[in-house]
Image (cartoon, rainbow, N blue to C red; front, side, top):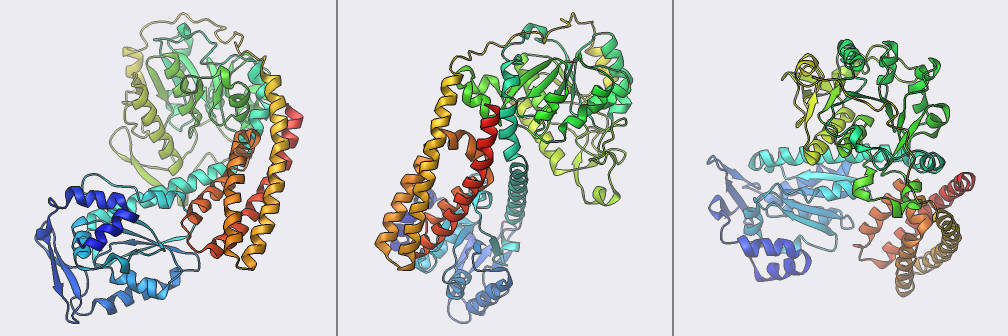
Length: 613
């Protein structure tokens, strides 16, 4: 590697330099041949593991080829597009990109470290690495390096991928894995953003409204006697379409007290239809229509089943159900975690927000020591073209699947080794169960015929479970839920007072931001670099002050969390911007939008706090 390149990497991308310093001698340079093209500039011939000799660039005219590559992407490169190059080679296409798009940022990824090593031994990296180069990633061969996913997970810019065409053959398997990783990362990010956008306000509002219920009900993992559940079988009954097939077995389990039965989500409607009452109904959905799940139960006058509720559940659910209640505190609950912070141990007492109530209940039963924990109706896929079991019908949700939806659905392996249709949501639930099963390492059984295979939760038909597991009747405390919580509420009044003062300080900080915005805007128009720079320093100070404010940190930032995440991502991007005037212009636009969301959000949130606290 040329000495200037070594110095450049050490200064800008020290991890890359460190990798080559430690591994330079052991990289397989036998597969690389640097040679002259017909036009006299250097190109590379790469020999694959199966002895195929492939050209990285044209053997005739690499520069003309580079121009064709970049020109073919012109319709996808807009004003603010960030470009991600997969495959660096000798870098000719990257040079051409910089020539045509001098103001665009880009990142570089080389899946074959030997190629980068050869290029850096023949060409100066100054031609490729400029102020607009945001990242340089090198596959190390040592592990499945996914550092590059950070860009796709956190950037708010449009990212356009340019693959050096020869790498579709040279690094075929690596490129396929790259595409799969990026697709999965983007899908997960979109799903998270969609979830956050849908529920960000509801999580905060519900936790504030429900706080009075939390203070007047027992905590499932803190106040309920573990001896009731320790070492005893617990059945989590979900609303999957296979539930109807097992309903008589569940009736037998109930009538003979063979296990604790926890109904999760909509399963209660099937159970009520078949006149089977569980030991608890579990709910956590923050949506405004969640209370409809329990309409059938309420209509039948059933009000003696304990409702195990997540503290950020839709508050209408708790208002409409008049029976006994037991709570668990979710990681989305802002009120309880703020006012009871000295009473709660994060790892022991909080239940991690998850893709379904079945996963939340699974966490709780593991904490209580129930064993084995058994799933029924947990299809996590489509069966008989149904989303829910028979006996479950809603006006606002379809229980059956349309043919088009089925055809477009994903596939996964079922418990019998067949492939079944599923969805991103169901897949997320399955992987979440698998992660908790691995973490808790208990004894688990999945009785769901035709359901998705869940690693760590082996399949066993419910008929066999009845013979081998449910061998004796349990001695149940019929009122296991009838306990008082042990929260020390003496400091809540002090916390409320402190929150009120934090809201006042927040408004002062907002005023300071507004004044700063006017100053940066003025200096940007005058192209006064020093004035802009002073404003940016003040911005950092104020932004840190905002993030230390109790009201903003614990409540408002969660109420407008999508905008907060966008703000943080844009600040990370602008920290790499070298042009002070451009940075000032971008900060003005960014801060204007952010302050608007803060003002709108706090107007709503302060009214909720006033009405509930």
